[in-house]
Image: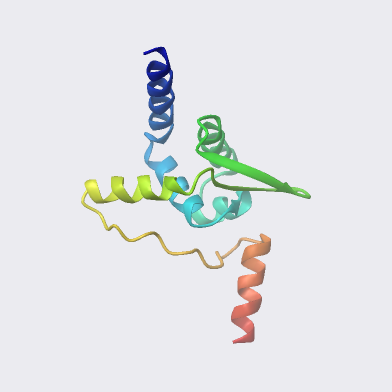
Length: 124
């Protein structure tokens, strides 16, 4: 029985971390593709400390993982099943079961992903 209590507490911790509308938006974005903080700042038009605070809560709950490349830190959903959980929650709330679209270049963002997207768009 002890094992179940520990598992239930972990589940509750994960759900508490998700229980914020902005964190759900972050997880939606990170379940599609990994993103750096500067991209998330431009995408959501929120200050970097605000984004970082929410990312830290999600990371502490084990919902988000990161990797460092030089000076940039890229974040992603820690488990691909998080996308399924979000899809089910979206459907239960009366929304679409369709996954969010991949993000394209965000105006004002100079992250590598946006730079590549803009370069590809210029080539077309």
